Image 1 (tube, helix red, strand yellow):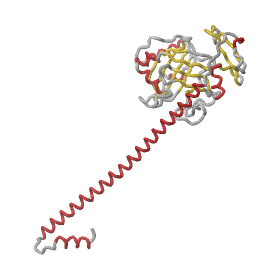
Image 2 (cartoon, rainbow, N blue to C red):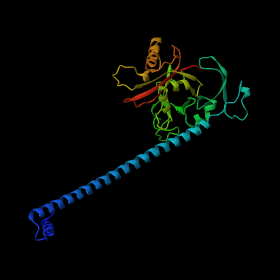
Image 3 (cartoon, one colour):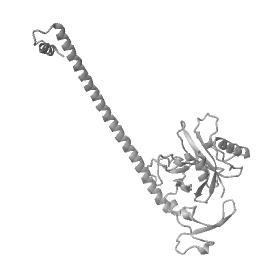
Length: 324
């Protein structure tokens, strides 16, 4: 308040000639206190209004991001639906003579699997760019020759193509099957795995998506009841079909290079029986409930890995052994 305004205030409160100086001071003090209170309330309301605007912006941004997240996931799942429809029904054949006449490409019929054990029924293959591919996956492979197989767990949303890029392991970390950006990415094989031979352990990575897609449901294996209902995993490659049974499911984390603790992600081929047994012993000990099924030296393992948020660089891992 400047001098002129102060003089005006004093004149206003001294208009009555009979008023005492103490009354003048009292009235002025009351007036200034009231003005200060109003000013404080005004400032407080301004702060509230600013906070409301800030929170509204944050809410709208979060809602927009969440909406975009779910839309992109929905779009990705629609693309995977198209791929599921591209799996070709295999012709019923016992020999080359049974191949339908309307199949234009050259079909190879095999009656034994890679270990020379007889197949339950003959299997059809075609050669694409010099690579032998199961007949049923020929259209998917032609669409993208990074495709190495299909992973499925009945009763879950896990039903996806698996990719392998030897020169760039994480190429599909944020890319869909069509090599376009995707938050969900695509399941992919660790390049230290050998799918053809195969190695003692094949390791597959996938994202933990909030929409219960990709590998989100792996973490449900922490519950024994979920395990009891989902013991079996199918991983069919372009070379062969295989069924696996879960033997371990556990929380862990990616460790520092100099950490000597157990690192599930470094095991692919056992140097000997002892190394294989040590790996199995470690994964069984990390599982928080009893799974009676185990693996023995010579068994082929499949490991599925996704992020877990129980600790920094947390992972949830499911390991299964081949039974068919």
